[in-house]
Image 1 (cartoon, one colour):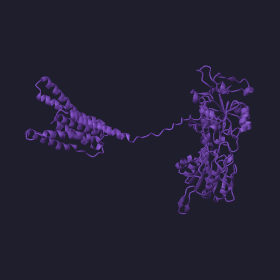
Image 2 (tube, rainbow, N blue to C red; image 1 turned 135 degrees about the vertical axis):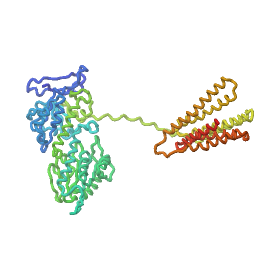
Image 3 (cartoon, rainbow, N blue to C red; image 1 turned 90 degrees about the vertical axis):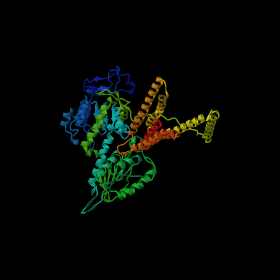
Image 4 (cartoon, helix red, strand yellow; image 1 turned 45 degrees about the vertical axis):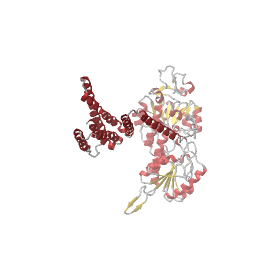
Amino acid sequence: MIRLTSISPGRVLSDGLRCRQRLSSSSAGLQRYFSAATKDDETPKGIPYSKLTVGVPKEHFPLEKRVAATPESVSKLVKPGFNVLIEKGAGSLSHFSDAEYASAGAKIVEADEVWKNSDIVMKLRPPTTEEASKLEDRTLISFIYPAQNKELVQQLQDQKATAFAMDCIPRTLSRGQTYDALSSQANITGYRAVIEASNEFGRFFAGQMTAAGKVPPAKVLVVGTGVAGLAAIQTAKNMGAIVRAFDVRPVTKEQVEAMGGQFLEVDYKEDGSGAGGYAKEMSKEWHAAAAKMLSKQCEEVDIVITTAAIPGRKAPLMITKDMVAKMKAGSVTVDLAAETGGNVETTVKDEKIITDNGVTCLGYTDLASRLPTTSSSLYSNNISKFLLSMGPQTTKVKDYLYIDHEDDAVRGMLTVEKGKLMWPAPLPPPPAKKEEAKAIEPEVIDYRLPYVQGSKQAGYLAAGVLGAGVISPDPAFSAMFTTFALSNIIGVQVVLGVTHALHSPLMAVTNAISGTTALGGMHLMAHSNSASVTALAALATTLSTVNIVGGFIVTKKMLDMFKRPTDPPEYYHLYGIPAAGSMAFYTAGSMSGHVPEIDSAAATLAGLLCIGGIGGLSSQSTARLGAVSGQAGVALGVA
């Protein structure tokens, strides 16, 4: 079997793939090269899975029933090429038999053989001093807690080993959630805490009204709303309890309330949100205010579940003896931080005690192990997916293991590499500072300027109109100039009033109205003595007529697009009655010869109707009426 280890980052780009054939059992201390660069770009970086052996020993920590691999996770490692060794009986306490592991492709061996013949050892609990010695210079993936277990980290350094801490995954890394074993196990712990509390509590969680009497619902207080706390809230709420929750991080309020819990707040403003989503240590003033609030809550609630923890430090004391003394007889406290000192002052690690006032205090540290099958399945998924991501995640080459420091997940969990301390991982570079916005000087507004400009424009307009009167040759020119000026002003005002959504129908209507140029063609046909002029006049009249008819048809189709099935019925055809009556009256008057000024009146009426046609497009409620008005105006004008 070929055995490999990692090289230092400074040599990655210059060294080639290195392997050494084991000659005898005395060569167990040879270096293993996990990360290697290539001399040839075509050669994949790293070591093929087929040359690596993964070992899973049995956990010997007191009360521990979990295992780092399940038959399902073993099959996922064997499939791409890993060789897997499982210690005999490693999964028995989690209800996974040796036969199941063997069926998944693993080899069942004795404990010494797992440590001796594995290139990578996958564990759950941090290794003991003896276990770490058996690791020698090979690779370990496990919970390590480097801040608390400095002696273990130093031992791994002295042995030139490589170690990855499952508890050091960058929790703000989105894809890191897949490898976040802390969260997967805390979720189980929070659930189990409520189950243990309900087992000790002497009443229902949910309130009941029966013929025999009324049973009030249990009141549960959860201190710390991380993953474990939220799981406890959800479980207690599902069981029918009234749930209250408290956390130093105000940002968790929304999550608590989304689960149906009541978020308690301290009468002292201080944000306890720390780096990486964890809580930070709070000030003395805050603790005093929090103690006052929690003391009052302890008098009211039946169950207290505490989950508060600060990475690398002793758990903060949240519930004092005096607070427990105020709780009712039969109440229960469950301290999930018992392993790191406890949040409840009466907690005794791994024991159940009953105080003088009848409060049951649970300090179990094996809550996740009390659901060994589920917790092992989730942890094995976390650790195996992390192992399978090392290399392929960044190199995009399948089935090759490569320790890439550019991979945030790998670098964050890398604690020791070939004896070199790599923990803690360097912090990501701070975001680039934004250039300070230059102070914007307040704009000086000249309120007088618009009035000056308006007065100038009024003066120019008055001068232009009076100037036209000075140069006017005769009254007919003056009358035409007046008509021209007024028509322009009216036309501009009407067009500006049309809503933007109706600009397309506006173009169609104005196109139809402009078709009144047919009048010129008809006049030429009536008075021309030239065949060519008559032909051109006929062509112009025909085109203008097409323009008129087509314009109004397009207008109708466009307006129909705005019509909804729920709109009331319309009867715009009734406007054809006054239109036909007006045309008949005009025709009769014109042909009689007794009312010569009726032509001028008809022209004025036609003009008003055309203007109304455009003005009607100012809103959708009058658009169709405008189209009818335009049609009547054009018809009267042509007549």
